[in-house]
Length: 399
Image (cartoon, rainbow, N blue to C red; front, side, top):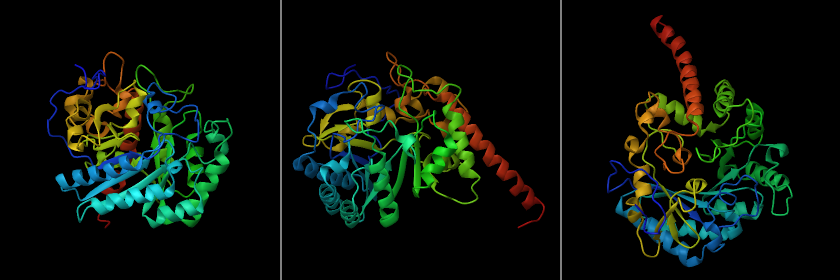
């Protein structure tokens, strides 16, 4: 089977509904280039080079039409809230005023009663007081991408001349934390097994983030993630979890940990890495192309492509794309061994991009399967250990 763009469809689609779950997260590539040249970047150093053929910055017509399409989708599905993620590349290369205008346009066009939560994800090197003032005025939250809170953690994050980005990134992060805390969304960090887990986490706490998002590096069965000798990603996550859990207070939110705890307790949790909640994000590229999320580009050339664009197609048409439908199919799209696993409701098969194997598509267990099992069982054990004293106290008459 072949997609309308000529790319091979490698997404499993058994039992997929033709209607789909509405999109609620709209990732808009306001700028398709980056001022850094991180040596491990899956987007610019990975197998998909489609970014080279697209305009560096999204033209005003693309952004205007995108705002229309978001409003149309919100109206069609009576959405009470949508997430607008201003992305890149480095989105601040487009200018803070551009980000503010797009945010205002979306808010003005969605139906009354639909809240728009806007966030820009930046490497922080271009953050200035003026930029943050503009973003704050337009109600745009700022998320920062860093590998840790110290220079040595960010050694691979360099500019195109090979110069370290850390001094500028640190200035931007401190400016955000010190003077615009109401705009601070948090820090996104890709796990590096070569770094000490607790030291990395505590270095991030020094930047006072309201939230930390820990992501496993994008890898798959055909292109495995880097592994430090004698260190497992599961063990790394467990070490940080224990530090976070034992703090005695909520120093910061860690989405992966809170989602895991919620799922273990039978509560709903939405995320790419865990759980079975329907996937609800799409990307608009700088040329107006409608794509699936960038993480798929770590698998193969064209993996995120849909053949749709904002000028000719409503977002509802993307819901019918085989790749999107497969991600919304729940257990029906998972490997047999995942569907029979006792951890299914929590793990959810892991991140979709991490299941890919050349020649076999995405209907495989995650390349991080053993790490996820180690982490989930560890969290479950800590949760159970806390529950036993509480139960004993209640049975003994203690209120």
